[in-house]
Length: 167
Image (tube, rainbow, N blue to C red; front, side, top):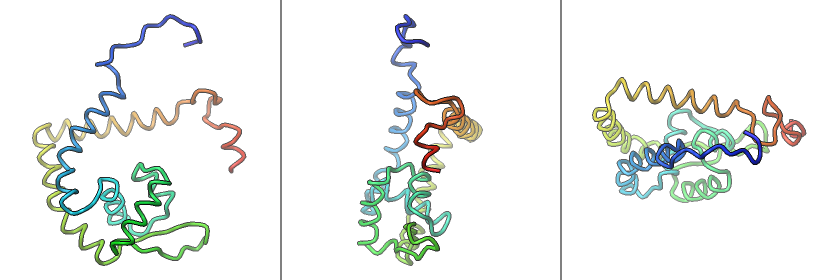
């Protein structure tokens, strides 16, 4: 679409970003009381889950995996370290910040995992296991397609001059 074109904007109720936000909020409301009861934020729980699933990770990988902006991740690290739930690990590259769960962090994850899985199972049972699997596959595909699309002001292939300079 070119600047000045007269294409009508789709209706608000048919907006993909709004539909995704509403679905996210509706599902997160199911998990939030459980996470709150353990004195965590949803973002802190995502970090704990990612570390429990993968073992030690660097901050860049954690930010991408947990969908958390780096400045927020720094605050999350401080809070989780203060509670003794994560610790810094030595990395081969001193410029990288690698963290891992402590024994207390692993124990908290293990205490929370069963109830978290039960909440997920309840959502899946209400929605349907086949529909849930299909939805998750479609969301992965949508993300991959959207990430592969050229962004405004970028050439096809997705590389801007600043991205090329960082390589």
